[in-house]
Length: 298
Image 1 (cartoon, rainbow, N blue to C red):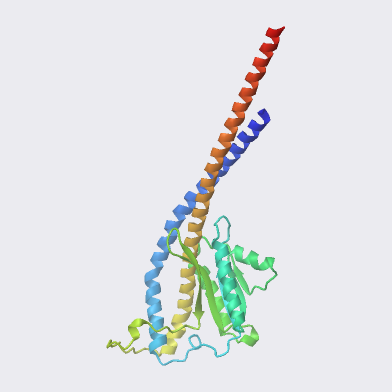
Image 2 (cartoon, rainbow, N blue to C red):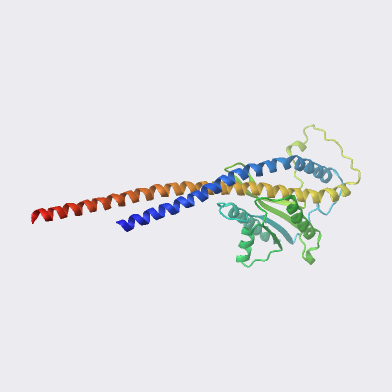
């Protein structure tokens, strides 16, 4: 019984050490979520103004810009997947990869070849393990991205978009990332970046509302030439920020679950150790009583 008690006590010490690590990681992730949310909120005003300007130039201008005009028969599409650099974040990276796999399946059914552009070591490892071709990849900044990282990704995607498909270019650009809803809910989504999709809203219906006429100086083509690269970089920047917030939230939730499981395991091991100690004490008492009886019988 003494050996069994030592085993239980050793396991309790090991689980307590693991619990300290998971609790520390939970607290770190909690503090980083707040900072990530603040960065997302700080980028929203510029994003809204930029989207409004691009929407006005693309919707109300009589222009046939290559970045806004869809190809009749697209052959290749870039799929930019954003995952994490590190693990211990629950199903964060797995859900994003599943969403990208679903998008790839849909594109192949449409006769379009998906081209992988990967952000984060988890997605890169997933593709390399399966010997899949990777057009370009970035890593090392997913938990704390910078705008320069977003600009580098956007420049690579735009270069592929303007290049002819015969020379290795793409006809469409899709972005797969994890959208931060709240501290509990994070959802992997797929979004088409280029060509821009014109969506009719309810406000555009014939209900007597008169919309203003837009005049551009310079021409809408020149406005789009200047705005679209910034728009793509800003969309990717916001995707990186919300993905970082989602990663921290997923890691916090995973570490909290690990900490709770460690506490439950410590309680169970403590109960087993107490039972083993009580059994050892009972056995020692029984041996003493048996020895005393043997001496008394002589």
